[in-house]
Image 1 (cartoon, rainbow, N blue to C red):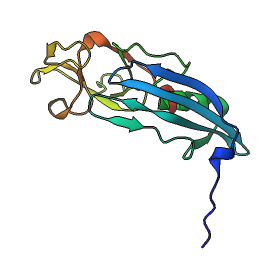
Image 2 (image 1 turned 60 degrees about the horizontal axis):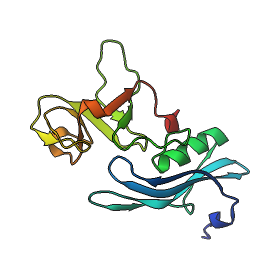
Image 3 (image 1 turned 90 degrees about the vertical axis):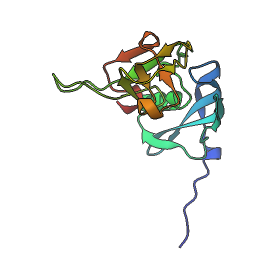
Length: 169
């Protein structure tokens, strides 16, 4: 059986965002790209993000996602490198979370950051230092369950937007 291999390096890639510098949980050195093909637009990114415990290499343009309408591909490509959908750099001392509006009377328990990582709110847990300011906190937002998470953020550094994460809309 023959495999159909697509040479994405020969596509005409358009840069739609560059993220160089500080960001929450690590510095970015990355570029976001889109490319048009007969079925629609594809999103990809190149570069890496350096965090406290890791260096994360972006998947690159060899494995793009798509096809999408152009505007949607731009939002996804920018969010792959930690930018807002309009290509602005979020402040490094601030965490923006997107929370889908829930059923009236029912509290939402999860939100996503710009890159799609899941965060959960918590109160009254064991104390942990805030990953942004270092103050010991017993509540706020954590990436995953409060007691098992490596990253905890106090409410003063979090902005929750009651909307779908732009890359998913």
